[in-house]
Amino acid sequence: MSPTLHRRDVVKQLLEKRGELLVIAGLGSTAWDITAVGDADTSFPMWGAMGQAAMMGLGLALARPTRRVLVITGDGEMLMGLGAFATIGVQQPGNLTVVVIDNERYGETGMQHTHTAYGVDLAAVASACKFKHSITVTSDVGKVRELAYQTPGPNFAAVKVVDEKLPLVLPPQDGVLLKDRFRKAVLGR
Amino acid sequence: MQPDWPEEIYKELVTAGVGVVGYVPDAGHKRLIELCQADRNMRAVVLTTEEEGIGLVAGAWLGGEKAVLLMQSSGVGNIINVLGMVQVCRFPLAILVTMRGEQGEFNTWQVPMGQNTARVLETMGVAVRQAGEAQTVAGHVRAALLKAFEAQGAEAVLIGQRVIGIKSFQEQRNQ
Image 1 (cartoon, rainbow over the protein chains, first blue to last red):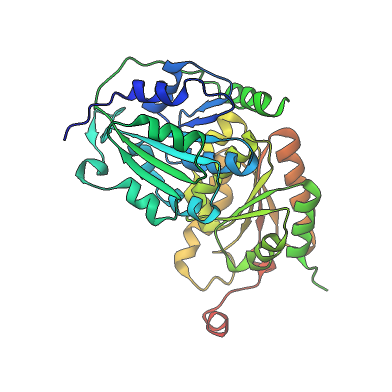
Image 2 (cartoon, helix red, strand yellow):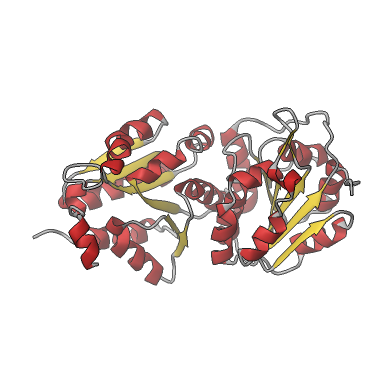
C-alpha cells in the first residue's frame, strides 16, 4: 500500500502547540521539515553527524529528565546509527521519543531506496531493543503525538510518508548559535 | 609506588561535576568504569560504538549536563566524522583514551590505529595530552576537564600502554 501521509503535514501536527517539548532533528529533510513548521530556540536541527540524532536525544533526555524530548529524523539517518536503539534500550529514558519520518529514500542524494524500502522494520528493531512502545503508522499521527507528549518511554514511531521532493527551508547553519540559543532557552544561560 | 590512577581520574570527574560517562568497555578502563557505575550521581552509559558517545555528550551539554567519554585508542577511529560537529558547534569534549598498539602490543591488528591515534585527533581539532606515566594521569585529566567545560575545548588524554600494563595472551587466559 502506498503511503498517503505528507512529511511536512506530519511534522506540523507533531510540533503545533509544542509547549515545553525539546526537539532534535536529524540532518537533511527532517531538519528542513521542522524549520518549515517554524524555527525555534528549543529545536536543534543537525547539518551533519549522520547517525547521531537519536543519541543526541538520549543525552538531552538524561540531562533534563523532567522535559519531554522528541527526536525527528529520517530512515536513512536512523539506519546509520542502529546501535542507538540498543543503547537507549539499556538506559530506558522515560521522557524520550524517537520518530522516523520514513519515505524509504535517501532524499538528499537522489532518492535512492533505503533498507526500509526492502522491508527492514525499524519499529521491530526498537521493540527488540526494549523500547516501551514502538509502532509503525500510516495514517494516525495523533497516536504519535500521544507517544511524544504523554506516554512514558522510551517510545518509537516510524511514520510512512510519500516520497516527495519539497522546497528546502533551511535553519541557521551556525553550530555555535544553535547550541547557545538552545541552552539559553532551556537553562536560562 | 604506582599511584591508583583510575581512582584519581574518578575523583577528578567528581570534582568537575561530571554527570554522564559514556564508555565502550576496555580492560584499561575496567576499574574506572566500575567506580562510575557505583556512583549514584553519575549515569554510566554503555555504548555499542564510540561514535554514539559524541551524540551523547553533545545532547547532554544541550541539557546542561557535563559528560565525558572513555574509550580505547581503536575507538578513536570510529568518531572521526562526528568530531566535525564538535568543532563546528564548539561542544565541550573530554575523551580519556587507553592506548593500544604501543610498546609491547601483542596484537598487530591494534598497531595501525594505535600509532595514529594522536594524529587523527589533532587533525580533527582535538587537543591531545599524553599521559605516559601513572603520576601524570590525574593532572592531565584535570586540565582537560577544565579546558573542555570552562572554555568549550575539545580535549583528549591518551593514557599510555605502559601505564595500563602490557596485555598479553597469557594474562587474558588468566582473567
